[in-house]
Amino acid sequence: MSQKFMIFHKIDGEGNETHYVGVEIRVAGHSLKCPLSEGCTDYGALAERITSLQQELEELKEKVQPAVSLAEEGITLDFPLGTPAEDIWKKLSEIEDEENFVAGFNSLSEEQRMDVAEHVLTHCNIFSGKAAVFSSRYHSEAGLLE
Image 1 (cartoon, helix red, strand yellow):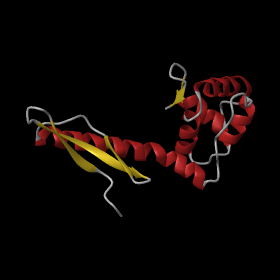
Image 2: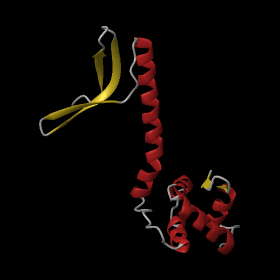
Image 3: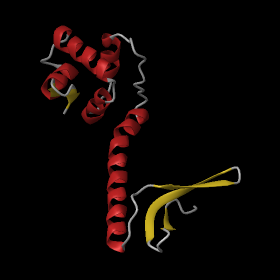
C-alpha cells in the first residue's frame, strides 16, 4: 500500500520554510498536491495539526459506523424528498439496534425528520415499540434523536 499522507514543504522568497500535511493526487500522468492542514513553521505546530487530523479521522470513523451497521442489516435509508412520513417511519421501525435507529433517523434531511416526528407524535402509540424510544429520545428544538 502506497503512502497516503505526506508532508509538503514550501519556501517563501525570504527563505522561510512552511510545512503542510497533505495528499498527492495523481491522475493520467498529472500530479496535484492538496494540503490538509494549515501551514506550520515549526515542528510543534505541525505535530498539533497531525493530532487534529487524527482526531477528525476518528470522529469520521465513529460517524460512519452506524451507516455501515445499517447496511449490514440490509437497510437503506435513501428516501427521495416527498416520501410520505409514514413510509419512512415504517422503514425506521424495522431497525433492531437502537443506536442504529437513532443514527438512521438523524441521517434524514431536516424536512424528513420534522415530518416523521409529526407522524410519530400524532399517529403512533408513544408508549410502546419504536415510538416509545422515539418519544423518549426526541429533542424537538434540535429535531434530532439524542
